[in-house]
Image 1: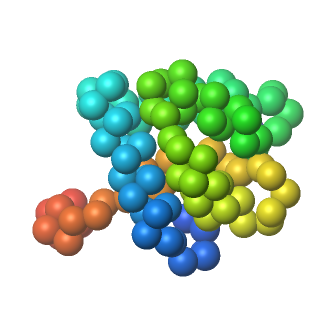
Image 2: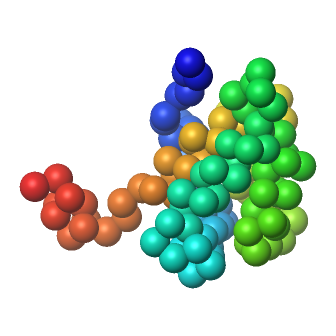
Image 3: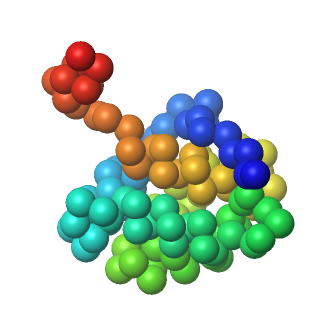
Length: 114
């Protein structure tokens, strides 16, 4: 079994990073419909090595590019800095997907938790 941390990084999010996450989410839904985030999640799972639970920067960017989600260098750096808590050049893809799936709207959040 694979044990993965399903938590968003503790570091506060920069405006560039928040905008990048919103851009990735919009494009994933636009390109993949209702299953866009799920398809991106599977792609990130495929890019992982069998023995590791992490994704390296090059594989992460390649997965986004393969799904038609192109980020500038500044967007990539801001997102990577936020996701890579240990500064080892690797991230857990579950943290990225959790950030994409966050419920942003307070109205929607209240409807979901009813």
